[in-house]
Length: 195
Image (cartoon, rainbow, N blue to C red; front, side):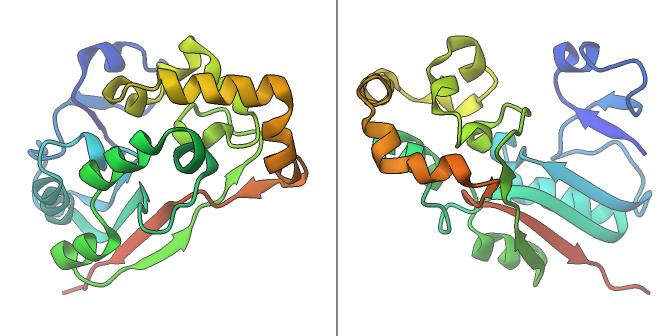
């Protein structure tokens, strides 16, 4: 197992018992052809400078399988981006490749929804769908890269007002009884032909 991370700051923050990590970018992996059984990328494709080149590199180094956890902009109806921050939806449409585009690059794949558990602590954008107050926390938002790319103040003010008035609970209170929610994340898997 080998991790890849382009940021030396992020590498320095890795736990001591984490997999070995090299400082590199997805678009130019420093590994031999077919070096690994599988290649995996988790919520990162939208940070690549050239996602097509990154997928081609994953295909080059993987013998059997490629797996992506990604966001399907065409399948998402997340309350946060729909009702409070449409700027997030617009950003996602600009930076996230569609599933059709992914298929156009590497061919057919299996895709399954990846519902997010209500108590997810990872810190990505959809993690707090049942805990809306966390979106108001400046520190929590720093772990969500999308917020660095939009002006969210107006939408966050509306969310804060709706939380204070009870309007959010009236509209979305049913979510408080849901254990996991599909907000648009997909697990995409290519099984590679064996020679």
